[in-house]
Length: 232
Image 1: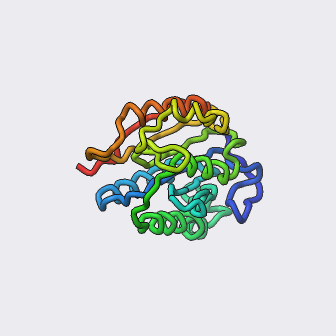
Image 2: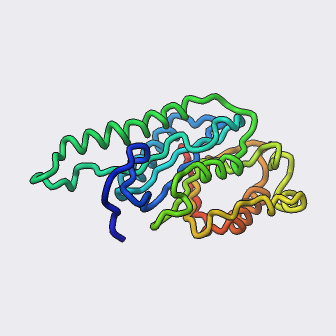
Image 3: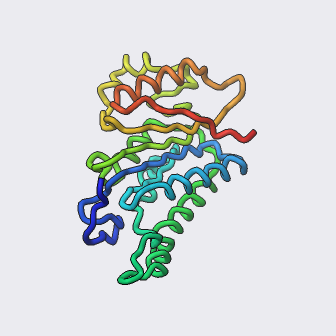
């Protein structure tokens, strides 16, 4: 698929026609990451951005007990990097500096601010995810690939639903939760970087995996791929 050309929107950095692809990254930092996990996370996000094509919308959001922090805290299209600039009529140095100033440095600053948060009492993963999707421009209309990356222990804990209270899919469905799902993840690729948790009070895998497999199925996404954001 060809990259759209034309004028660039100063707010989103997308060419005319909007985002070609969209990658939304949701970070659950209600339990802060240790140093090793932070370094690995930064590397993963850097590699994701580097491998993305021009006009891929990159969106960053965070899970928080404070709803005012939900949504897209960074959302811009990846601009030209200058690597493929034609020196006959383009200045690769200027393009490269603009790429760093308007795109990579703001991403790094946003991520750094997210990683400095304190522990929180709730982890409303489901609610924060939907808020991020809703506030990411072109998420439902992008012409190419749509992807969600979730960095989390996937232990939902909010007033709506809490695995810590033994509430799983059946509890959610009995209280009309399925009817509240937006169903706006159709054919979206979902990648989960799971943060490992240990302890006697951690909810069972049966509750967590049983819920999320049904949740993403009802939302219409492709089956999630799962890997670990370990530190050993």
